[in-house]
Amino acid sequence: MDNTNCKLTFLGGAGTVTGSKTLVETSSYKVLIDCGLFQGLKELRNLNRTSLTIDPSKIDAIILTHAHLDHCGYIPVLVKNGFKGAIHCTSPTADLTEIILKDSAKIQEEDAARANKYHYTRHKKAKPLYTQEDVKQSLALIVRHNFLETVILDNSVKFKLYNNGHIIGSAFVELKVHDKTIVFSGDIGQSNPLLLYPPKKLKNADYIVMESTYGDRTHSVENVKDELCKVITDTYKKGGILMIPSFAVERTQELLYLIYQLRQEDCLPPIPVYLDSPMGINSTNVYDKYHELQNISHFEINRVYNDVKFISDPTASKAICLDNKPKIVLAGSGMIEGGRIIHYLNNHMGSKKNTLLFVGYQGEGTRGRAILKGSKEIKFYGEYHKVNCEIKSISSLSAHGDQNDIIAWLKNFNPAPKRIFLNHGEMHQTDALRVKIEFDLDWEVTIPKMFSEHVLE
Ligand SMILES: [Zn+2]
Image (cartoon, rainbow, N blue to C red; front, top):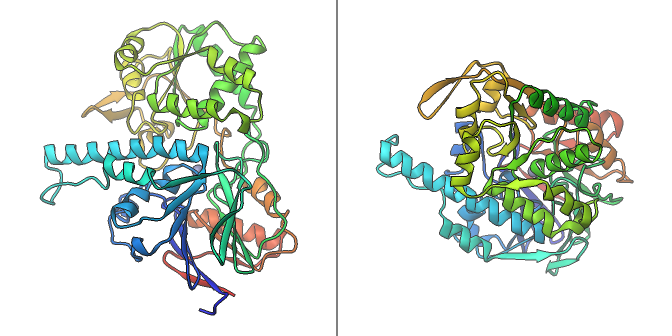
């Protein structure tokens, strides 16, 4: 490598939507942008257990775009294997990363314990990918920054974080390496997010690394508020319970805000709202703490949460779950892979008067996907259970920008970058975005393969 060149290596999030990890190397410094866990299908998850192609102790720092597990969930593995550098991110990202990594370690530990108890594993003893102790050591390495603060890492490498409107604290990274500017988009949010400020715009970049998960989609123009109002009112009229499997970060807070707005407009019946999710409550507290990063006043944020009953205690949760009165319940997990939503389904999915409402993407192989596709029975607690309740879905509530949002954000870069790399997408998503960028912007596009290296001159 020439003295002023740098090299990108895609260690994850290439040809897949999880495991985001891009290494940037100069002759004197190595920084990893995001450090995500591979999730979903087994072949992908197995990648979390294969040995790393780089010695973690040789990586100088990590920059985190945001706290979703597919962007931060691998950090404890790196730390366990010798990474000792700083982990740079915004304060809300630091707080959410703590919640998300602790939950992830708990799941890893429980899975290993279950595998050992029932001997599912061919290995002698199943070990968790990481433990709470690994998480504790990881969190100690976090260094918090404000948006727009210039952070100098080395005499040739510095960076700034800009709001990208995806979840609270989420950022895109402007990385300056010698005389080159490389922008890492992170997950770009919608042009007009419900709670957050719109993504910042930049004019100059020599290279862009752009995530493409929603590169083939345009969000439908359904009126989310009207749809939500109808589902709530219809369920209430039947004397039913509205069960919403909800992701703890962003989706939960957006839904509570929409319910609040509907109440303000006098559109809703007097139906109580429960957030029955310890992780959802912890995440909501982070939203409350950084109210200035939201596009609504603190006064209003307080009013949004005034009307919600927060349920953390398992005994209280059980009592609410057994009660048959009409209510709205938000509970994890978002794809019905675990969490308290299962208890609600166990008690209320068998009755036609109740409704199960999906508000987010349901990954392949999940119970959520099976129900959404029309399965009349799903399995949990070792048995099949009938799905008799009403199934509804609102698809356009998304923290991701769609193809139009992505192209609009890219159009701010002028002149054109030398090259744009499209990562973090499945092939059909990435390829659809490539075609659109080539056609609309006439830019040079590269779709990097996993472990491929690219020297930037
Ligand atoms: Zn994300």
